[in-house]
Amino acid sequence: MKKILIVDDEKDIVETLSFMLKAKGFECICAYDGEEGLNLAKNSNPDLVILDVMMPKINGYKICRLLKFDNKYKNIPIIMITARSQDEDKLIGEETGADEYITKPFEFSDVLEKISKYLKQNETV
Figure 1 (tube, helix red, strand yellow):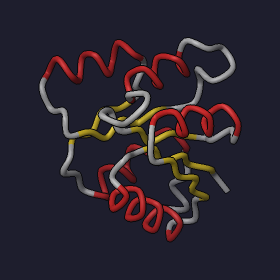
Figure 2 (tube, rainbow, N blue to C red):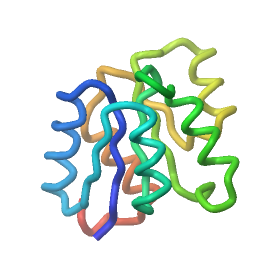
Figure 3 (cartoon, rainbow, N blue to C red):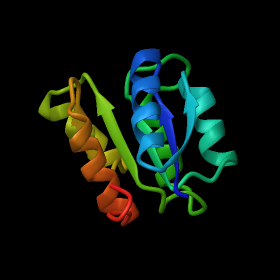
């Protein structure tokens, strides 16, 4: 079973994504601020991270950079899901190493498509 870490300070988004992904056969770990998310990313060995940008303690860009520039974690795919939709925000996401950048509001099917792309779990989707 593939493990997905969801990091977002909006409880509704975390719970909705977690519920939907568990229904598709994924294990989900959840964090509600950047610091907790970074610790879980380093200690729980997720197969993929879904990451918000604007969060308390540590923002998503910094978490992404810290993970992607560390040889131990650099191969974990990171999908950023954020309300920040300007081109410059997407560019910063790319520069910090995000594999995908999805803006809110989003369709669950889009998120699932990106997850499948990185985890090659088409048989589960």
